Length: 362
Image 1 (cartoon, rainbow, N blue to C red):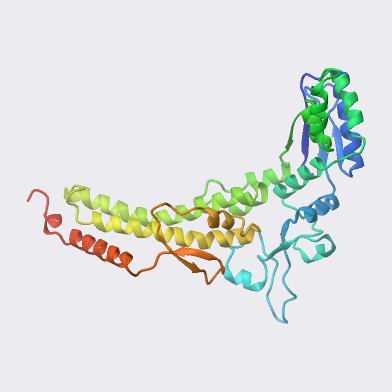
Image 2 (image 1 turned 90 degrees about the vertical axis):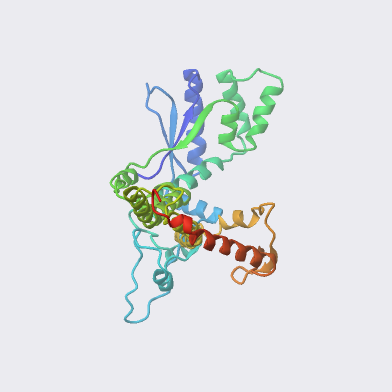
C-alpha cells in the first residue's frame, strides 16, 4: 500500500465549502501527478488521502539529494560478495566489500542503487513520508489565488474586503497547501502509518535486551534509530561496570565497611571515571559507523564542530590529521603536566593511606 498523507479539512466548514475544497485539492493534486482519494460521504471529518507513484518519489528524491546505498563494483571472480541485509552489522569488513557507501540518488543511474525495482519498494517508509510531504507542499498552480478567493467566500472565512483577505492570499506564496492552511480551510497535514511496515515493526522483538535498530531505522528514520543504537551501546557498556559495582557493594555489606573506610571504593571511583572517558571515545566511533550505514554521516559532526568550548578550557590550535580542520587541543606540557602529576600523587596517597585499610571497629 505504501505511505499515505492525510490532508484534514477544518471541522467547522459548511458542507458545500468542504466539498468544494476537497474537489479543489483533488484537481490540483492529480494535475501534479499525485493520487488523491476523497473521504466517503457521511465521514465524521472531510479529508483527502494522497499517495504518489514511485517515479514521482524518485524525482523528488533526486531533487532533494536523498542519500541511498550504492551497489559495489562487480566482484572479482570467486568472490563471495552478497547484497547486505538490514540486520547485517556495520562492520569494517562490510565497508571494505563495498556496501555501506551512500551516494546522492540519481534517477538516471537508479540501477546502481540497492533495491531499485524491488517489489517491496525502493524507499524506506520514513523516506517515502518525507518525499510525499515535499511533493504535496510543492504543488503550485498559476491560477491558485483566483479559485482560492472563491473558496474563501464560500467558507465565509474572511471579510469580503480588507487586509485579512490580502494577507491570507499573500501567505500562499504560490503553494496550494500553504494557501489553504493560511485561509483556515485545511486543519493539518500528516503522514499515516503504513500497515505493512508497522506490522513488521510490531513483530520485532522489543522485549529483548537490545532494540531492533535496523527495523526502527526503516520505519522512523536515522534520528530515532541512532537514539536506539546509543541505548543498545550504553546498555552493553553498563554490564561490566554494573558487575564491578555489585561486587564492591556486596563486599562492603558482607564485611561491615562504610563508604568512608571501604578499601575498594576508591578503585571503583577510578574505574567509573575511566569507564566514562572510554565510553565517549568508543561511542563516537560507533556513532560514525551507524551514521555511515544510515546515510546521515556528517550531519551531527557539523553541530559538534560549531559547539563553543567551555570558558575554563585552554587549548592550543592544531590541524587535525583526520579531518584537516583546525581545532583546539590540550597538550601534555607545561601546566597540564604539573596538574596531572599532582592529581596522580593525590590519588596514590589516598589509595595507600593506612586509615583507609583499617578493619571495621578498629
